[in-house]
Image: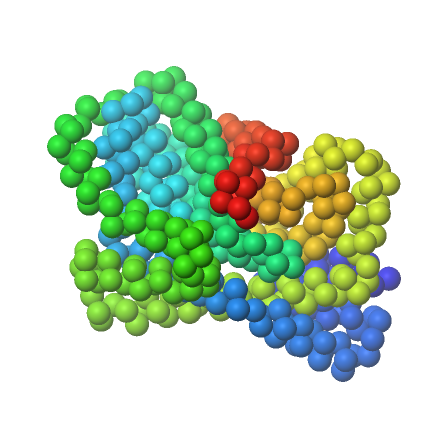
Length: 429
């Protein structure tokens, strides 16, 4: 009965347009009301929300969000685009490559797929259309490539997975995300290059070595942030939470003092935007933790584990089933609550089959990244179409081959664990 109330109430609330954070919290409370008293259910949900947010590692999220806001306004996107153009602009489909590489770099630096979509798309879309690229193709490339920043560290969603998994190493997750993120990026570049060759898109002239070097020098301060943050974590100089605070300080100095793209009078607006985004993310985390607890006392994770293992004890079959379920979930649910809700359900299943929790973390994030690019709740899809000023229906067709290679990359990461675990093992995580 409790499970039925949980599922039906959650789907009903979503279907009538209740925001997902409220839908999660209300469905968790209704589930608890079936098994305990009404007053106790209110108290329990409130306690679990507070307990779920009482984590030192979660302090990294508001800091990385603020760092992303500073980078988004600080002229970093333009410098990364110029650097990427100097590297690959002369190749067939060069501007599409530039879009993908710039999104990978900016997404990795800012930790936000939406920020990458907005910042890079706002600059690259006009350039690509001016050079003769289709508007829909330009938007599709921007939308899909911006999600790589959620896998390539520093990544807020990997911190959320660490919380949901019960303590998977954030440093190991950060290292594990590099090769899968790069794999997805190169796969998208392969499709973009083939598409550009068929459409005979123009090729830019080869840039002089001096100009390439100049753009590289301009981009070094932005790229150095990755070395500072990830290098410090790997070397054990500071934790991921401390690294996020250092990222804010570095982004502030670079944007305000170095590049001088942000005026001091703009800081209150930037801080307010970061606070709004943080409040949304933390509300989702709090209500999702309450729902996860409600599911745990109803033994849903154990029952799902037993059910799936009764279907098959073959690791390949189970992973294929989980991938399919997560791909469907990603279409209807945002990435943060999906990670918090489904990690406790599926992690016990895969660990019983010998799958490393760090490996599974990358699998679940890659899965749900695809959902960010699909209707009806694909936030990156909506932002990308808004930036490009086109309808969602126009971008679906060029998105399909890009989706195909993202799914192919997901399968490679799923069934070839060294793609994920090689770097963490090298560094002893």
